[in-house]
Each structure stands twice: as structure tokens, then as C-alpha cells.
Length: 325
Image 1 (cartoon, rainbow, N blue to C red):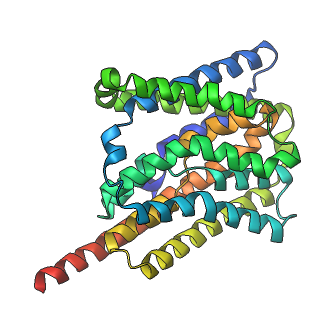
Image 2 (cartoon, rainbow, N blue to C red):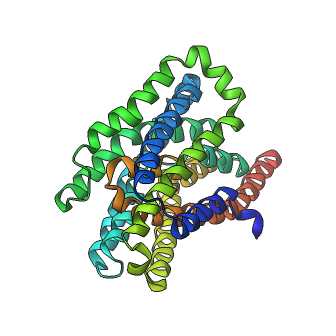
């Protein structure tokens, strides 16, 4: 069971604990806020540098598959999140509901979507293309969705859109422009550079939860609220897994394609989600906003890891049946 525990999640929980016990005050707040901005810009710059243009082109003609994944990520998830809030508005406090809905607006993961599709013996080139495109488009679509949903509630920063351009989009474009010169170096040092990605997230989490603790976050949250968040996250993932499985089979995709749709269409990115939340929302809200996402991250890894092994067995049976024919 422990092999399903993501080491990065342990780092995140440790950072939350550190911020809860030793939050930053005074000039420390400004220091970590500025450090977070620099770290986020660096992270998106390196993402742009690492992103292979060939991977974007590969499998691009499989438009039906990509369209289904895109609709699951940016339409189905938000509809389900808003629907749950509509029917159970008092189940969570407003900040946690905002976090759940923000989670639903995020793009898919890249690394874990591809990795689990590979383990499950699905269509890996299609997963690479869809997950990469989802992450790239999410820089535009997530702020747009969040703006449509939260603008009337006053939960967004007034300069959120401008911050998205300067802190996320421009560094990413700069990385892509320099990709022909530094792309190979970035790919070779992927593991080393991943520490930069994860380090930037930990900085944002520490800064966000320090602010949240100073605003008495843990006095507002009860154990019941955390349990409800876990149940909602599990329910959301179960719904999307079920719907993607049924729809992809109804549309007569091959088993390999169905695996790609299920795994890419049901995942949500923590790596991009935390920085985007830090850019879009006031610092006093970021901690509670990303809490449902942090919980969902571990739940999806645990459940998808089990599902990947089951799908791999189905693929083996299908291949064996074809050989016999």
C-alpha cells in the first residue's frame, strides 16, 4: 500500500505542517511572495523548454480522441463540480467549494497520465499529445473558466489575467522559443529540473498556508469538512472514470484508445494547479483553494495505479485473443 504514496505528497504535507507551526510574518511574507513569483516563472520557462514540438504533432490527427479528453477535462469536470455545489451548497464552507470547483477547471497532468497509460498498455502517443495539449491550453482555459465562475463572487485578483500573462504565459513562450538550443539539455536533465518544478510548488504552498494560518484557517476547518472534501474528491473521480469508460466504449474507440481517454480525461494537475491558484486568487485564499486539489492528487494516483494494472491485463487478453484468431 505504501508504494502508492507519492513522496511529493509527503513533502507537501510536511510543508503544510511547517507553515502551520512556523508561518512567515512581516517582511518574510513579501520575501516568500516574491520568491514564489520567480520560482513559478522559472518553472513555466523550463516546461516550455522541455516540451517537444514533435510530441505535439504526434497523434494530432486522432482528433476524436483528443476532443473527448478535452471535453472531459474542461467541460464534464466543471459541470460536475458546479452541480455538486448546487445540490449540496452547505456541505462545505465557501472556500473549500471554491477549491473543488477550481480543481474541476484545471488541465490534465502530463507525466502521470502518460506513465499510467503506458503501464496500462494504452495508446501512449495519443496520451502524450492530449496531456501536453491539455496542459498548454490550460494556461488559457483555466483562468477563463475561473473568471466566468468566480468573477461575480469577488474571489479573483483584479490583476489575475495580467499576472497569468507575465508569470505563466511569457516565461512558457520564452522557453519554447529557446527550445531548439536548450531543449535537449532540459530533457537530459529532466530529473534535476523536476526539483525546480516541485521546489516552486513547495514555496507557493508554504507562502499560501502561512497566509492562511495567519487568517486562522485551521480554526475555520473541522475534521468533518476534511472528510467531506475527501468524499467529494473520490465521488468526482469515480463519476468521471465511469462516464469516460461508458462514452469511449459507446463511441467505439479501441481498448488502447479507451485507456488513454480514461486516464488522461480523469486526471488533474497539481504541478500547474498550485501556481495558477497563486496567480488568480488573493493570497489569503490560496491555501484553502489548493487543499481539495492536494487531496485529489493523492486519491487519483492511488486509484489510477490500481486501475492501470487491471487495464494492462485486459490488453494482454485482447492481444492473446487476436493472436489465436
